Length: 258
Image 1 (cartoon, rainbow, N blue to C red):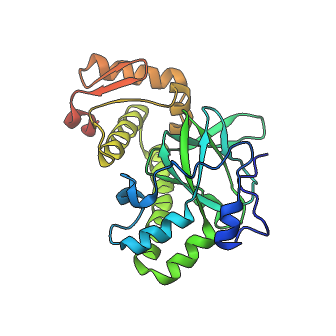
Image 2: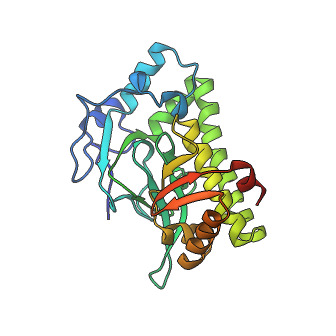
């Protein structure tokens, strides 16, 4: 099981411990890695009103970067909670393993989004976080982030917003599964993905799905065949063009009205 950081003393050992920390199986990517102060995604990950001094302070929290290869776990269920992870490049899925060995997908995280808040409540992660493609994450020790929240109100508000978004996401999943038919679920999924990509400066109309049809179905509570059938229907109706993992939304209005 992956233990993402080994501290000299414990998970709250401060800057010295962070500097000595090394994720197992992967060296720290420090010297040539872009800092938070220079990162193009900082307005997505962090409050926009941080001063230059505060950004440099944040840089000291995120000195540890980790590459996670396709199919590799960033963390697994029951791992000790120590850090929040900001997706710098790539994408992830979060999954729960069922008692019979089956995998249930609970979410997908894109660049500029965060992972790890599931461990705040119990001190242990409740799911696995698996890379859908070769990805990089910034590792932010939670105890050090809490210290910064105590001195910077906007950072505290931002962390609260990120935690609140997790609650909203859970409620949206319940609505998807409880009130929508198969066609509506796939339409809502594509629109949500489109909006998130647009927020990060990417095309909202044309994008590649990083997840498989089976993973989509697991998330939406549907079989793979049903997902494929819905995408084929959208294609026949001239709403969405779907070719393997490439998606092009042709009619946003009709897609949103499904």
